[in-house]
Structures are given as C-alpha cells and as structure tokens.
Image 1: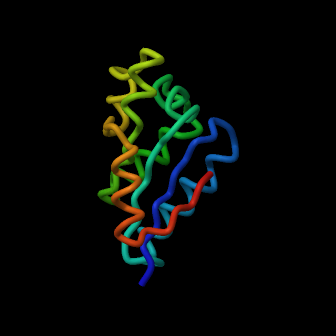
Image 2: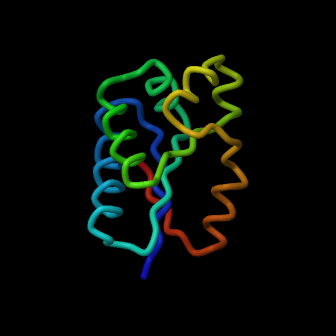
Length: 109
C-alpha cells in the first residue's frame, strides 16, 4: 500500500484540496500512511490564525497527524512562536528526504 507525503505550500484556496485529501486519506485509510508538511507561504497564514486552514489542522490533529511546518522559514520571517500554537515546527528538509527514501509519494498543493 502507498504512503503519501502531502506538502502544502499555497496560502490560498489551492491549499484546501491538500488538507481535504490528507484528512480523508487518513480517515478512510486510502493509503498506509499520510504525513503533512507545511512549507512556504501557508506557514504565515497558519501562524496568523487563518480560519480557512486552522479547522483542517484541528481535524488532522484529531486523527493523530499534526502537520510539521518548516522551522527555518518561520525563523527567517519571525513567526515561529505563533506557528507553534498550531503545528510542530521543525527543519523539514531532512524530514522530506527521509520520507522520500522510505517510499512516500510526494503530493504538493
């Protein structure tokens, strides 16, 4: 069975299918595992509490899959503390590489 690495970068409506797919894939067991990474503009939107995305993060959290956001971007742009209210914040470059090595299929939104 496949494993999916959902990387959400967009900070507009293009991010919503990523959240929806990840949530439903976990809930309905479409794949063996799903990991969600926030990487790029989406991080600032989440740090600012954007109500388009926070409910999806809460749903993922309820399913046991809190997204990981890129620590370096958060550090550079100064919103690491507020982002930590909603997600795990870690350096994601190595995390992405490790998941690819384990056979996760990347899906980007």
